[in-house]
Length: 458
Image 1 (cartoon, helix red, strand yellow):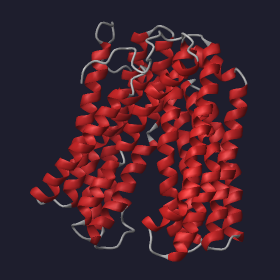
Image 2 (tube, helix red, strand yellow; image 1 turned 90 degrees about the vertical axis):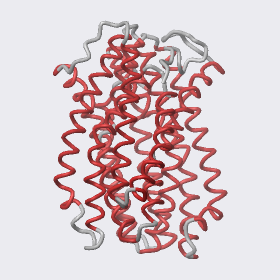
Image 3 (cartoon, helix red, strand yellow; image 1 turned 180 degrees about the vertical axis):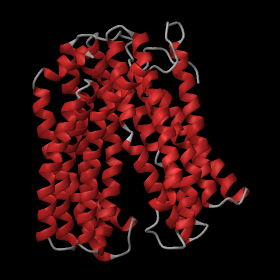
């Protein structure tokens, strides 16, 4: 990969801190957001390819992959703060004119990722049998095989997060997209070789994923090191830098855990409402997740741009970015919402032939369609506050919003019936109540100036 120039993501070539307006600002947002979306979409292709190939081996193998890949993605998802924290730290220092410090902060985050990856991989390999012990007897060996062969790739997976965050902080989302897309294609070839060519079965799928993620990490690390050329940067690990990255990441870890907690509670309630509700919930949740990619891409753009503007001490540009990104977020959410509501009756049959599940899913899609503008607002504000380094507030806000959501979920669990009405109430609680609570907590924060002071001091 060539060493992309520093103005990536800034189509006007303006230095950090120079205020852009109107279409120039839109182009800057899209120049970051579109490649970020591509990278976000490319990652789930790993699991899709694994599922398609392993599915031809048998039901037990596919069930083992389903269970073990959930464990793996959960382990990786817990550490997504590595991307967020390095983006924010790098962007603010670059905006302040300290590009060497920005790259150095990113490298500190990458050392932290390597450390966490090695420890987590060792733990996952050792605990694999216990983690899948509740599965049917015939499924357990396949689940253990996938975990043990994919776990060595965990350091690479976490390094991908941290190095991607570093490049985002440098306003480069194109390189992570190219790497992610190339990795998805490579994964197909390696899986075919290991699963079928070498007859490794599910273990081959895990090995293919591990090798691919490690290669992706090596590629991204090489790009980051190229950015370090010409600066007096010590590439060796330093306890102070790693601990600083960890301290910045802990609040974001708490925030992530609260979000995952809300999702787990939602799934638990859907399960209690019966098979029809649970099946329809899976359809609605899959579409919600798809929309999250588009909205998260805008959040990534907001995170990087706001971080650099705060580092440059340009509050006017920060406010302009905030307004414009919120317009993009709510507008994109509204368009997605209309599409879901209008196409729900045609989308549901793609997932199921059960008439009751179809109706429930279609109604659920209409409900989340109405919630999408709020979700767009929330995703963007999350990105803005992360870019400002306001992780501590986001952690407390995450706890508060989870506390608000729990009684809503409990009310659905106790009072709602199964089927169409149960799913509708459940998604009103999550897509409406939970997201509105997040919108209020982030909106109140964004109205003040405290978060900008924190970001400018970062």
